[in-house]
Length: 177
Image 1 (cartoon, one colour):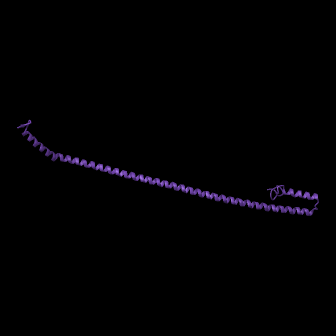
Image 2 (cartoon, helix red, strand yellow):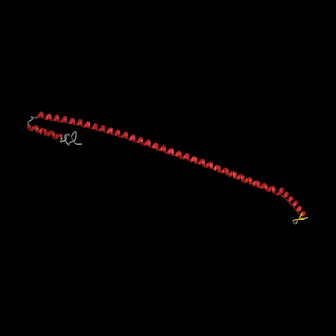
Image 3 (cartoon, one colour):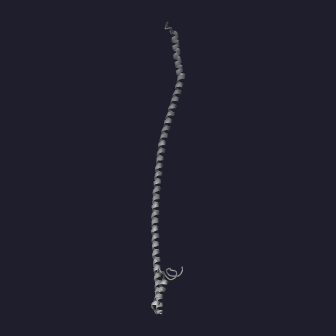
């Protein structure tokens, strides 16, 4: 019978051959090929999972490094602030010490001036006393008339000096240095 130009006998033989070929291919060819495809698919999936895990690890490490960097920056900032505070404290201490030392030096200078003044006053008293004794001695040796009295006053004034310093070169205590 020839329907649409196809013989049924050839069609059935070809259909049986096709079914046998599909069975043989599925048994011996498609199984291993599908197995290889499944293995390849599993391998790709594993590689993608590993890549995702590595990416997650990279993100975690990046976050960890950023936190550590922020911590280091905070520590550095704290150390700088501490150093500035220490330097300011040292500066304040140095200024206070310098002020104290300057006050001590000033006090010592004032004490030295007072001591020198007291010594100068004592020397002047001694000189005046000596001059008074010398004048009294001369007066007692001489009779004072107006002329001798004036010359004695001139002599005493000349020995004292114009500015009230001792005899000699005009320095307290008289005499040369």
